[in-house]
Length: 356
Image (cartoon, rainbow, N blue to C red):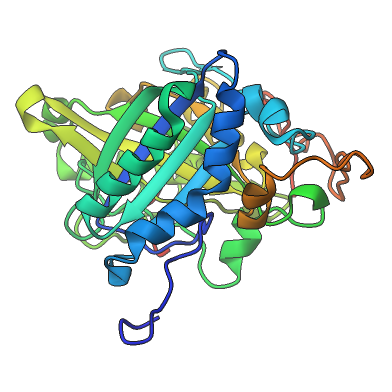
């Protein structure tokens, strides 16, 4: 929408919110204290109001917030059953690298063109949450040059566009109680840039699977070691399964910290889990993603971002006359195809922004 016609903020829970110049990735845990769950429930249900108060100051800055809820608190917080694939992030252990599982009950993915709007929205929301939550991780990301990560490569090239975007990110009839929601995985990676920069450009390109300057995709290896681009591409029965990435660089040169915050939205959680399995364990096992030699996973959490209507209704008084929310209904198999995977999680087959 153009600046002259924009009259309202971006709706909360808009997975496809536009690329932003800055973002805050805020991971919280909910306190066990009496009343904490009620406070969190009412605050999350009012996100749209808080967003409107802050975003209206500059609608062209496109402030948005996506709320994700983790498996540990889902039942008590929403007073309903879990989405069919939601579970705690499973630790992925390879021969040389591990994707750790770290605590996370609530995710706030705050995006805008202006840092001050993200700051103010986060401040107001945390004021409302108060002692009901503890901040586990706060990472402030920034858009770097022409959408490049700190390794120098364009990040997000493989993202779905057009109708492929909602098809890849939003739950549908396979889990009707949660239609319109999306699974979210976050991981915080740090990079030893001195070691990465010691590689030649050709060596870096072979690891990533794309040229560095032009972002042109390189041919897949026929056998043996595969590139990051290939290992993070999931194809089942000839069909490619996409996710939406809105990764951002973060860091502090003064403290020698350089990293990438990975955030992936997916209609099917098993797709991201399969990517991580291929990266950390290898395909074939033992041939891990060589990018992990220069990217260390520090965190790992799974959330489900419900639709805006679901989020707003969470604080409504439960109606005892209504039947329980429906449990899982799916039109796809509950197990992954027999392709030699390790079967992490509930693996099930089925922006123009890096190569994952």
